[in-house]
Image (cartoon, rainbow, N blue to C red):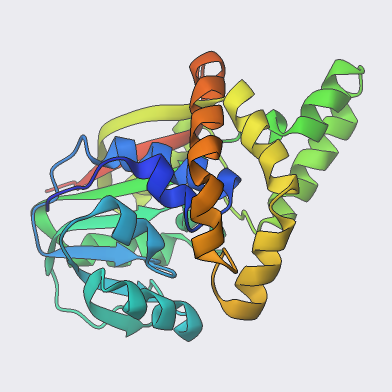
Length: 266
């Protein structure tokens, strides 16, 4: 797989700043890894991430949401799109040399069957690349940090639980817990690192507040930006501003995790 570049300005032309910032950071992490084919994307959604990250088509994308798959089809980022759940993918054993799942697994209530299905589909020498939240993310939100600063840690934790329910985060764990889940599904961790430090996480949490029009557009039009041509007129200014702020905020322990997994071979 060949990867593109210049992720943040390209993402900002078609997505709200909060989403574009996080996904651009994830693109930068994925390009550090080789993606030999065939490639499977579990939870491909609307296909924007793949279309921004890759200059070649991904072999197969799966998602249970047919509307999202329709949008993914328009991006031409996939050779094949399948409407199915992640625990029952209609492909033979060991079909893929690379499997990815970007900011998806936390939204799946019963996760172990999906991990085991990925194990079944992955070639013996393949890798499964994942981005997921840690248990630090909910406490890096602006309201939780404010409550903690005011001496109300219990309320901060309550808000953290509300935050996870609101975003349908069924799983947000520390590194030890995530590794235990991967091991239960038959995986070892080949590499791991945290990303998006607390201050940067708080920043894009604040950006989410001003993304309400984008959420309305996504709901009504199935695209994040109602008028992409207009967005391009000022996306350069947004890019410059975010990059300047990131130089000060992108420091410290990350609140999200990247894992590259490999199969445990008996």
